[in-house]
Image (cartoon, rainbow, N blue to C red; front, side, top):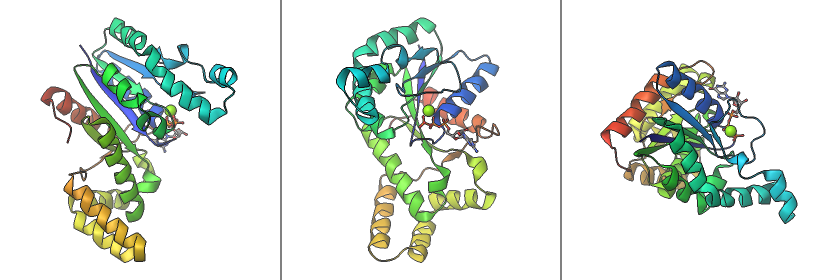
Length: 253
Ligand SMILES: Nc1nc2c(ncn2[C@@H]2O[C@H](COP(=O)(O)OP(=O)(O)OP(=O)(O)O)[C@@H](O)[C@H]2O)c(=O)[nH]1
Ligand SMILES: [Mg+2]
């Protein structure tokens, strides 16, 4: 019996680094943790995954076999993952870990918006699963960017319908003031709407405000967990939030 955590986010948002750092963090507490790489196109991964999709599907081979470019090749690889899902699951089962961390493909849309994504999450989900949605700090620091990233988060929630944590990745890049502003926006969405009214105009403003209202209505404004993999900050909060989901059996919103 194990708990599965899926790290999901836009390209370069810090998924692999966090999977690495968090698995070490859990390991130091004598928690039996296993890592799974589901990115068939990954060139470099900052850890040695216990289970690796690249053992089953090799991007270059798929590109050659089907005369595909890198993007078409990746799409085919991600779809092909489903063919090996039972073997991958057996490998995970055999490891006997209590916590399984799953690093997902660099291109978020390949994992989230192909049919294979939800099949993979339901197949590899253990006793309880959670999605960690990594928010890019560069996007999240402006009101308009923050609304965009929350909309993407809502879209991920809508695709997977799993308990989801919003992670403010690479929080070391943000100043204390920027971090506080984001916390204020989610705690009191009215302040976000006021910021949008100040900083955007016309159609963009109208659309941002309507999206904000919709996000508030579906309870997307949870305070994101700031995490810095480079400074090892926020990992304790991440662990506590995940344990609440695992032991409390928190349902998808
Ligand atoms: N400052 C800072 N940089 C980070 C942090 N985490 C990751 N990075 C850097 O961000 C870049 C991307 O990190 P990855 O972990 O490869 O991101 P990813 O989401 O796995 O990337 P893809 O799989 O290619 O989409 C690397 O240069 C990391 O060193 C962090 O907490 N702080
Ligand atoms: Mg990665």
